[in-house]
Amino acid sequence: MAKTFAPIVHDPVRCRRELKAFAQLLAMPELSEQKDILPFFKQRSQLSAYIGMVDPRIGTIPELAFEFSFLGDFTADLVIGNRAKGHFLAVEFEDGRNNSIFTKRPNKSTTEWSRRFDHGFSQLVDWFCILDDFKKTDRFKRDFGDGHITFSGLLVVGRNAGLSPADRIRLNWRASKVVVDSRPISCVTFDDLYEDLANRLRIYPHATPFEK
Image (cartoon, rainbow, N blue to C red; front, side, top):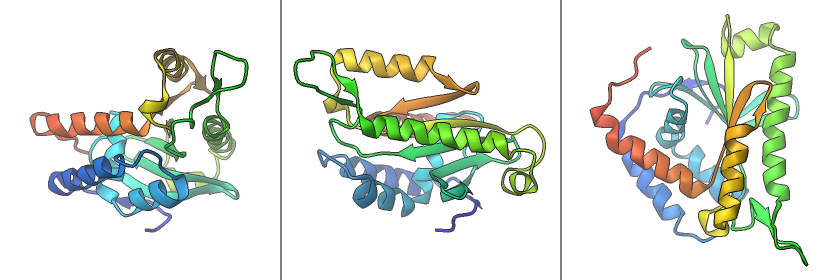
């Protein structure tokens, strides 16, 4: 898969087939980012593109790029965009393990944010920082287009089984309250992502298809 943007036309039949494969992947109790997650999504462009539906500003006919390099060492696992609308979603995948979001510490009843979660969130912060720095360059216009371009972020990490009710409240609060340079960053587990995409695909035939 090229590391530049390629247009993806939504194919509901293929997307459902790839979503079913995602459900089968989630039958594994723990997922490695490098061995399981990244290879899985790189081989399934329809499902990867459909992640853009998490942000309604993108729609169902997006452009897609894996391992997209912003500059130098700054590389996003996945970027989904709508150039016509001037909006892009940067996606960071981390491990899908029960301790990928919170970890327990000796002699503490409250869990702590894990290093994997902080790493993934910091990646998104760095991407937004570099994007803000080079938004007036020719490279930026070539990659994302002219005019006012907006970005949002999505961090996919961990599994629902690793979250207590108190942990879930903290995760949801952070996802809804913390913004970076006025940009929202959604934080979801792989189980959450599957349920969201399954629900959206289930109602898609009754929705108005997005058009550029």
